[in-house]
Length: 137
Image (cartoon, rainbow, N blue to C red; front, side, top):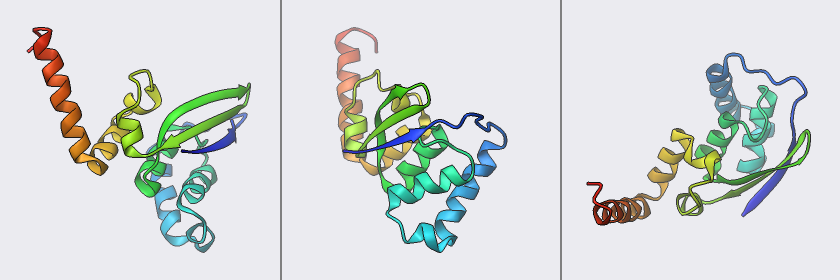
């Protein structure tokens, strides 16, 4: 498990999120300083440079796609300080349903399914079996 701490920007920018996310991915490929960093640190830094916090959906998606890590838990430590716990696709897919930072983000779920297709098939089979037992099929 990997974790990092992040302070929330006092004035978050919610404009042009899609374009800024694209720019962060471009920076990860082009900026030598970011290319020299570890993948997790680089993804967080690139997202920060375009105005995202480390716990924003855009940054969590970048972490998943670039570094293969997914949110397991995000905790508030102070009014403007957060701790983000990250884990593998397997960790995320087997996390509790109340892990909303993962389960409520379709991009993260799709990336985890792409990285762990066999595990996802097993999970789907168990969900179908449970639904059948409850008479929901």
